[in-house]
Amino acid sequence: MQRPLIQAESVLHHFLGISRALAGQLDFQSMIDAVSEEIRHILPHDHLDVSLLLLDGENHLQAYESGVHTAWGDFVYHPLPIVESPIRTLLLGEVPYLLSDDATCDPRFQFPSAFNQPIFDANLRSRLHVPLRAQGLIIGALSCSKHTTCFYTEDDVRHTQHVADLLASYVYALRQTDQAKKLEIAQAQIRAREEGLRLGALRLTEELENERQRIGMDLHDQTLADMTRLHRRLGRLQLHESLPGSDLLPISQALQESMQELRGIIDAVKPTVLQLFGFEEGLEDLLLRSVRNSGLHIATHLHDLTDGEANCLAEPQKIALFRIVQEAVNNAIKHACPETIDIHLDCQDGQLALTIVDDGLGLDDEDRRNSGGIQNMQVRAQLLGAQVRIDSGPQGKGTQVHVSLPMPAVLLTEEA
Image (cartoon, rainbow, N blue to C red; front, top):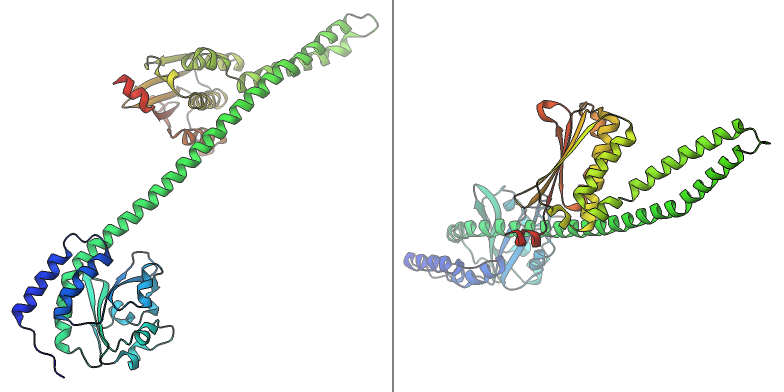
């Protein structure tokens, strides 16, 4: 039976209806549900679907259906490789359209690995497929199917392509929006995981710092005290006439050196000045003590422009920053032979800016740039959520270590 011709005015009316139906649809399934009835007036169908090529770099597609539900609709959750699609020749641009009088016996849909079972399960005999194009590229396909054979004609191809061209730009925009949403969700998940790891690592760092300090106190109260008693006993033995003092002198000197080294270890793991008197005083004491222990003549300066705001940081933050400064100062003393070491503290645009500057040899050696000490500073800064940058000093001489840490929101509010 021949189908009645559709008047041009009626076709235009339904095209406008499709445009109105598209307005406000924010996902693919809602879109195809909204336009299916208007399309039905132009292209009668028992099954309508939009196949969409994914931007996954692996040539997969999804399908959104209206009318008879088939297993193709499951591709929304489990995308199908294009090579297994019955309409792969269309999706790959090898043919301009596919028109079949009876898809159940059409060899174009019958090939090894073809996922064509829905054709038989849903009795989709007459089939018409045209590409969806955007920016000159095929982004998917529009497909119409009827249970009866020999339903669609060459005239329907033209109407179907017009409908596809009308849908393509909207489908393209939805796909880009959907891709952007997925990317944002993925990035948010990554940020959440990174933040969770950072906070967990920061808590671990705090616990390790507490343990370091406990060990420092144990060494001071027990080990160093025992060594001091041994040193005093050696001193008394040296006064005994029956023992040659020359035999005991090397032992006494070695013990004295060990005690001095142990005091240095205790000072390093237990920043008492930082805890007792504050961040700035702790840094100043660190500078003076580091230079004094090195035996070198190095001028040091601390420039604090924060009005004490650094003391309002959380204890783990202050200790981590202290350790970064400690590493930078020790690196300068050990490797750079500087004449001066300066520390600058400032608050700029909601950031605590900490800079350690020396006028030594600099970091021209690539091995020094990748040294364990510099990596330790970078890891500590990352755990804090801070940024660390290492550059040449003023006029290209020496080294500058810049650390930028966001100030807590509560402090910024109070300041405002």
